[in-house]
Length: 244
Image (cartoon, rainbow, N blue to C red; front, side, top):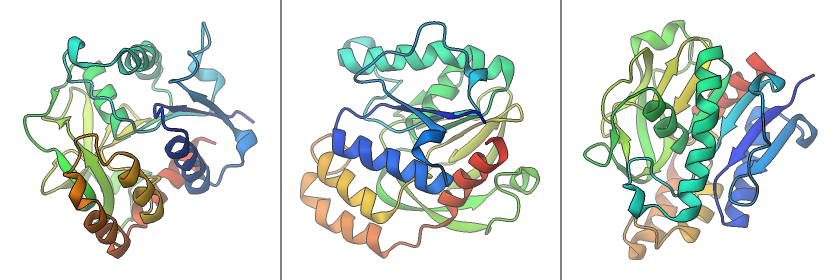
């Protein structure tokens, strides 16, 4: 049975560990079913073949693909470049892929889409999402509630549907919350692995990273705990069951 390749981008160990545990939990995976690579610490193996894995899951991170080269840290630039080397394999082979938040920007950028900070950034916290008509025919979204809450927090966003993609989930502040390319390549702007406890820790870690005014941290934590976030985890669980 093939493992899932889980690529992580967060240099903060506690945030990365929480994210990895959340992905395993939502996917109903044991640790031996995952090949975890923290790209802040180690490079991708040379000659990596994505078809050796059941699927690829890319977690979130502080980087932005739309930042100019001079605005990116050395680490962010290195991580982005490594993930970009995998995208031609993934899209050409229509290999199972789930990009979470940052992963949406990576996929859209690879496809020639418009990713920027011009519009559609969202403050950290819950976002009210809804299914598009196309979601009724997709195995990851069919039968889900028409409206649900998800946890978000991003400075850049996809500005228009990238070429060759299907639009599955939207929200008022951010139209492109989930898309699909081909039959098996997915990405979400929200965090499908996240729950309120995990977001509380991320808020504390990233309170000085420009996602929100630092003095609003406690109010944002309270807002996250008051939300009802269950559907995003089901989407990630369906992904793992479908391809695992």
